[in-house]
Length: 140
Image 1 (cartoon, rainbow, N blue to C red):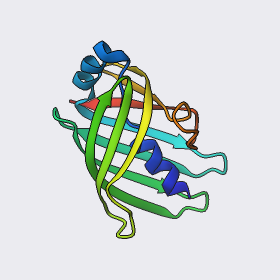
Image 2 (cartoon, one colour):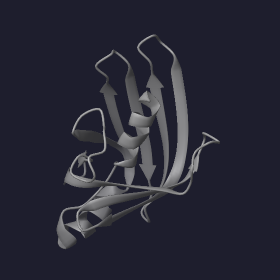
Image 3 (tube, rainbow, N blue to C red):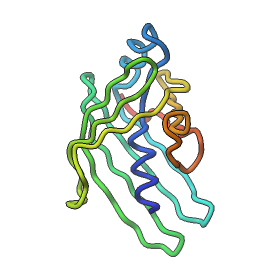
Image 4 (tube, one colour):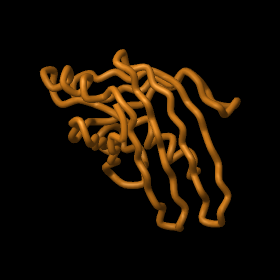
């Protein structure tokens, strides 16, 4: 379940803000982004995603349970920004049981060259560690 939450967090990685803002969001999207979080039970996650100029991405999510077990998932796919919404189409997953392709969406609260804030609650009531997920850009 914790891995699923971290994967959902990753999947909501990026989005835009209006049609005019979509182009700007696509430009800001390229690079390497990191999101970290701590669950109420003491577990934690770290999502690292690298996005190229055409929206293709590779991602690694590392989840540590509250009792110290570490699990890693590697994913690939394509991100698109449409009408202020980030659409993630995951095409590869290291979990051989993953049903692919898988598409998820998140509304972009804010994105610039240093920070991206996504909200998955506003689209379909999906559960995430917090309402807003904050990614920090760590590389171009």
